[in-house]
Length: 296
Image 1 (cartoon, rainbow, N blue to C red):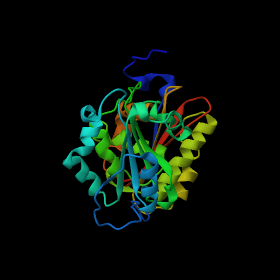
Image 2 (image 1 turned 90 degrees about the vertical axis):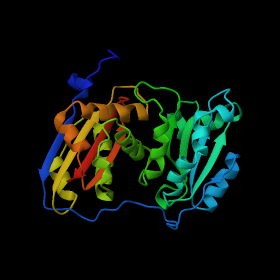
Image 3 (image 1 turned 180 degrees about the horizontal axis):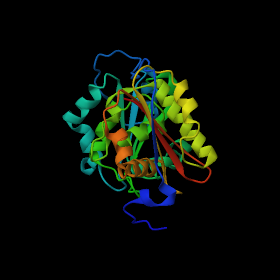
Image 4 (image 1 turned 60 degrees about the vertical axis):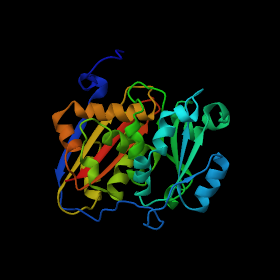
């Protein structure tokens, strides 16, 4: 397999599909927000992971944990300095959700934590992860991971940190796909609309279905689109698959890059949409299958 092929879209393994259907529905959209007060709350900093977790649970907050680069002191660490920047902190405060920041030294971080199943996408090295204690549907789950070790397609950028507070309430796979779209250099607009529960669940279900079949496609799209029961507008769906053996963020970035290779697909991903849903799932063939569903 060629690893430096600039356009996987032309290879058989990277066929990407798009489908649009005029449909009579467009229902209530819902950008899920925190269950807490919308009044901005200052960031709480805690240096002990166990204590930070306790406080996050107590305050129903989002817990952001940064594991610094190995053998780099705090004053020299890029993310540590970024988290201390007033302009960066303002972005988190303005998210209207309470945030707890916990910074850990890599040399002192428990191996159990680094190698835990919930953090397997951190690449067993330095990076950032977010645990959601603010929303009942995601309580205690890792919902964002930004590894600082370079992957095949995903390489950490300081601007990625600023995307975290604006991501909608959702699972790790859902938020990772949305982050991959928003960090693209072309600044796609499909996620500027409302994060819609029905579309999101449909994207999740179809990604899982493709992964089970180990086959990319718009399987049973006519029936699925009708079941969305949205009102007015055009329903669109895009699908993509990764190369085998990649981790989550590499695959999310990879799939967005695939969509970028096609004018039709990119028109849907990059264009303004009234509502959207994204997700991605891995099959037993080690390939990740992504889905985006929109209402224009």
